[in-house]
Image (tube, rainbow, N blue to C red):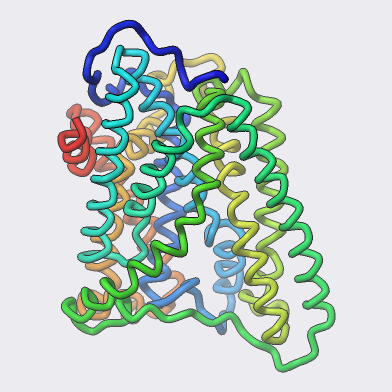
Length: 405
């Protein structure tokens, strides 16, 4: 069976963290750009103190905002980072092995890094935002290190069969959802936010207590994304993002198929959320489930789109010759953990009921949340670029690397 990489003869304990000049452009641009969608989702959850974070009785342009949020953001942004997390695990392991680190040393580094991610996630969820993913990534990373990373190519093809089965399952769900919509006959049921007490708390102490109760349940519900992380492992073994132009045909097929599934799968619920379609409670439950399941295809779909963009941008230019916006967003991607945590601090300061509470004070909660998300993301892009100019990795990345290495 083909291994992740050929073990080199040397036996250095480890090489240390990757440097900026060794990084591939596509993964960092993907992480930096997709933090905007993460911000749009989480800011809305904070502003509405619940999920999915939208106005159940929209008017005017709020209808379109709801529609776009359901089809392009909700349950579609986090799978991108799940795929990229798996991709990063392989990149880190390959680099360590190619530099002479023993197999035991590679495993030790990965386990240590992921254990610290669990600790970071617990701190994040306790003090800032219950909907943390760092801890879940850490747990899944430990599982992948122990079970998946050192398997051969034939074994990793299993994940493609799993995704094929998920595609068939999604098609069946789509048929069931459409049948439920067309046969809907009960009272119309609007899309309502599922409340999160920690986000509605009127004091920081109260919000902290609620977060400690909400975090374990949230983490348990998202551990199922292991199969999404596994897809990232498969893609990294083929190095799809290091040279996108060499895999243009595959990336194009993935982008078209996966984005079509994720958009079409979210459309029925989006029409209800926009107030353009009225269904009963049973039909609403059916289209909501379809929206959630189809969202996982947004992970590979968005990644393929970004990879194709990178391929086009770098066809005749080196990454260092790209424009300032691309370089700045890429800098944020290199510091995505810092950017992610910065967002949570911003939501707490700007949107919590016991702080500035801008969602209520500025009128339209939906547009306020979206505007705040764009502003915070823009500030993080500028800040990351300034860090890059000063050769500073970012506080979260620096701390994690020191603890790991």
